[in-house]
Every structure is written in structure tokens, then in C-alpha cells.
Image (cartoon, rainbow, N blue to C red; front, side, top):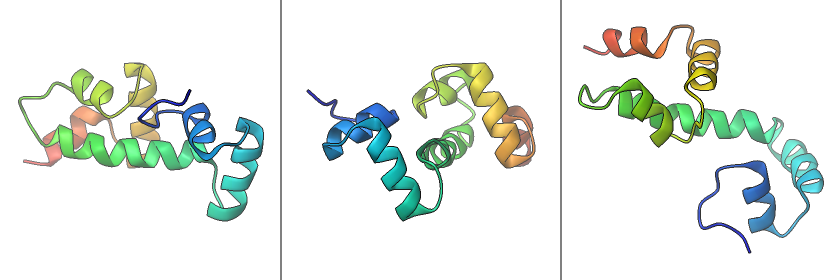
Length: 93
């Protein structure tokens, strides 16, 4: 049985009715990028919106945007945005 929300490659593959391996290859061929890169982009867009709210902590923004680990969130955020989530938040004022 598949989950209602897609939070991983396994969830997406299940929803599409394919194996993870086949879905991953198909996704890369069609989208010209890996599923994890796409998923991180979606999560970071949500995190940016959440970080604009000063009442939401950075940890809460990370978890609510789909990251299970704050260290992974910080690493991915810095890698893509070029700054830490805290710095990003301070630049939004």
C-alpha cells in the first residue's frame, strides 16, 4: 500500500506503480535530473516560505518541509542557496 504523500523515491515509485530502480531511471530520462535533486528543490522552496515566518524555528521549518535531519537540511540548503538557513532568514527582513 502506498502512502498518501510522497516523501521519498520509494513513495513516488509506489504511487506510479514501478520499482524504485525503474522509476528512478525513467524520472532521470524524462526530467533530465535525479529524483532526489527534484525532491530537495521542492523541499527547499517550501522551507524558504517557512523561514520567512519568524515564529517558525529553523528546525521546525526543516521538518515541515520534509527533511528528517537538521544536519541534512543545513547541508542541502547551504549547497543550493549558498548560505545557511539562519543567514537566509536574516536576509529576508
